[in-house]
Amino acid sequence: MDIEIIFEPDLHPNEIAEIAVKPEKYGIRALWSSNYHQNWDAFISLVPAAQKTSKILLGPLAVSPFEMHPLKMANSILTLNELADGRAIIAVGGGGGTLGAMKYSCVKDSCPDYPI
Image (cartoon, rainbow, N blue to C red):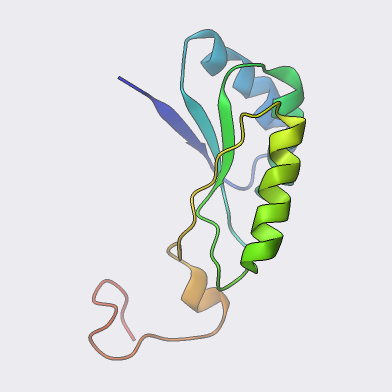
């Protein structure tokens, strides 16, 4: 069974690095950094963890193409991948707070989980 851990975006990158060592020791597959507009950059926050680990996969979760141009996403994940020696992963998606952060709302019935 593959186990992955998602960090909240308010953790300092150095805290993520300190925490990341133990999951790697116990064979956890991946560590994800939540991507949220009010906190640390999800890509940059994983760099210290990349420097302290050697096997565990590292990546931002969920990076929205509405907030970040796909070319910039590619550049950021490739940079993290270089610093992590080929261990970078990415989850692309809208995320729960994307529309609200952009001051948009759903068209009626298109977002049943989010009230208009």
